Length: 479
Image: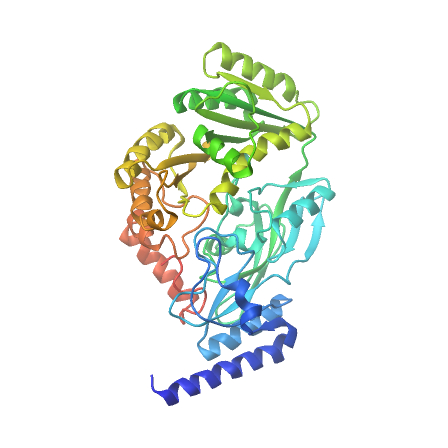
């Protein structure tokens, strides 16, 4: 590009920013370095390509105008939610200038229908705010994970998972309808709260999990459930993952559909959490290799969960599945137990150099996966410290890895790609996946080629071409 061409390009970009200000208001467009610094990426990829400006629309109509203007100028759009992602999905593509479109001002809860159990929320509404609004109405939103500051649009565009997928399913399972802005600025608005609707293709499923590459989600109709009136939480210790899986089978048989979470923590993860917070709060006396957090709830007061949990633990101890355990007697005790599980995840995010992974395998293969992955990562970095934890109920084990004692974060980070591939190859060999709940984004594009067939990838490219022929919506992500 010649110097004159660069000047013309700069002038065009200045003109685009001015046009966007005219469309959505001066305060809705940020272009100063200090103002856009917080919009450069997510937890996985904190920096990316150049940001021409950040646009913060207030309505779906304003979003459509912004998309039309960028499409006409041939400028790509990087959609952004809460910035809590772990795959680089909210990071502008490196080597490319983009307009970041942030949904932080579109945070209204448009309606709650307690009869039909439906809530319509905008994309920028945080998960915490949506959960609280549902609770205030005596209802429950079946989406729960550690990033409560994440936004609903981001949760849906990545098809987020969480702690209670076992009972309530992924983010897509909470959705009855969507409002979406397409790459040419047209709007699809199908927020009808219908449980049954076979009128043509179910288009919402195309956008859920597409990470903003096919359209920009601006609002959603979400399925609610009656709020739980009884619940029970237990934390148990087991000597092996084989025993954990036996206990899981027993728990499902004893608690039935009431079981909502079944999480595992390794002793290494618990020790890492204790070191991170500077205090030790053991859940029970025995220090076992594996710790399990199991929870169940019911919207019926006639379900005696306390009795069911006592029977569960008694049988498990009698059969040798469980070494030790405790049942939370109060809400404070429940929160203390959950703080162990969430504390491991927080420590991993905040620890420099730690490798985060997001694999899943068939539940029956969890023990084999962990055993094989331990050997594989040690072959790559001898002495590294595996911390496999997460969601037993759906097979989503986050096989995170800490550097060996004495190894610098920089040296360990240089091995991330080799470690990640080693873990992913084990998961794939057991019929698993390289991404269970965090998406593909920038981080897992190469891994996706190993996980999917050439036919599947070709179909995905065809979809992208049909929905976004100009490749302006979150380019460089997934494919």
